[in-house]
Picture 1 (cartoon, rainbow, N blue to C red):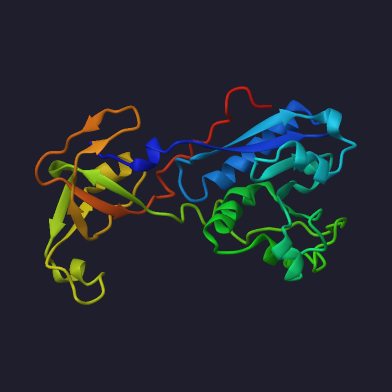
Picture 2 (cartoon, rainbow, N blue to C red):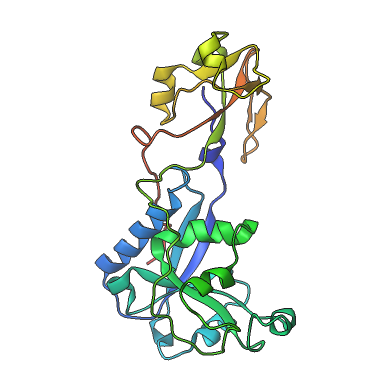
Length: 265
């Protein structure tokens, strides 16, 4: 068997609130767009969007909404403009004293937030989380004043610049495969794909095996496989000679598997 850890990742739930009267069809588009962004990196996304009905909050400010969800990071807001521009408000955090002192925000009542494309939510969240970018930097791109005022308008929708279809699937995965599922080579041409010092041998999934799992069959380095404990406590044992290979998804054969969480709008 080919073990792909992406199939066993725990779901990360993004919380969104609906504050306008959108039809079920319009909400389905929101979920579909979020799913496109969630499957940008992998056809087996670990992210899901749960939409709560908060239409009674339509007159509240974003700050009031965020204070009602103090531990939710981020809080996403779907409003009447969403069907028109494909956007969603990404409410990040209230500024702290350090941000006020360094000129990033007007006061601690300032909410650092940005309206972005729904398809961009997951990849931008990842960038903010690992420090590849900062929300305030993205706010600069759409001309939000600095320091961030307590009240502001945003005319331009922010996008990541990635195409969820054309750039799919940008993140590789590491799979464990048994000896009958892999092949090895010491051919000079196969070894040449690696920078010096070149290895003595390289491995890849057999082409038919790769296709069955939505993966590319490409020569790569490999390490010895170890037994793996699944989240439910089951232990997968691998025969001698099994390998761990770093492989890329194949957009021609991988099938996106995003599903709306049960109970969500």
